[in-house]
Image (cartoon, rainbow, N blue to C red; front, top):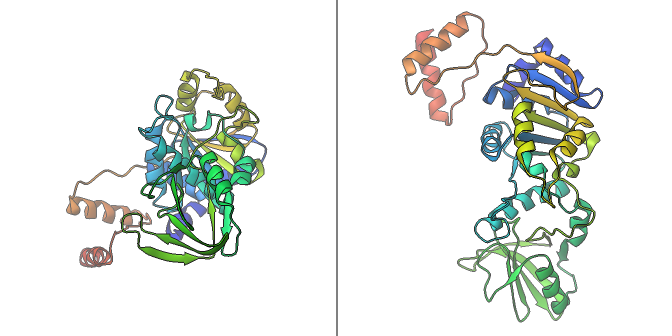
Length: 353
């Protein structure tokens, strides 16, 4: 992705923004960015930070940013907000928990993490990461397992016991064979015991029951989110202040949506969340300069950017505009989804030049 970072590095304003992000806690406001221009700038500014958190005004906008950002970083995660009506039901709760638990796993295991969520995703109370970490189950090839205790622990973690594992969030015990399908894995695990000691661990296909890969050790993450009401934190608290850069998409919209949420017993209020954000290093990107209400804005920057029209398969018009940009001294980066496509574009410009 150096092709996209290099032009940013040549801009004086970009370096001024980078320096501002490293100063005192608060918000660095950048106006003049729209749509994919935001993700390009966010990707550039996030380099060197271990944790990057991107907050959008709603779930739809968060999903759009997530899809755009995946162009730059395939390891970005989407963290959906809880659905207040259906989260406790099986309608979509399992899917939501699976996505959220994959983010928890990434935060506990990966060296660098980028997460995109909505303002709602930061406003529900959660168990602290350390508590979740202490509840994880670890198995090695020589571990000793108490079957009765393991069954209780899996149920406590939210797993459902079935005769045969078919879906994430299920487990089964048949003699000395234990099958567990964690929400964080693409395939279930099969643990075979010799007496009470682990003899082998391998993944398998849930549909065909065919073994896939042998491993030496595994970690089982919860299949449900607990809400015990004690020592609860917000999702924002999962990110260490000194190692995290928070990006805020459209401050005005964030405030409007955040304040619209009624303070339920298990919801963090927007004003409290806003205070936490003001104590962190944040970058706000927006099309227009926002209202300052409640935000600690340290510095403001106004960028002049140009959007590119959609050509709707009109290649002649596209080539004409690209050649015009080139004659004006623009640096052009043209991406193709395949090698043959790249060769076609090379031939087109060779003929035009």
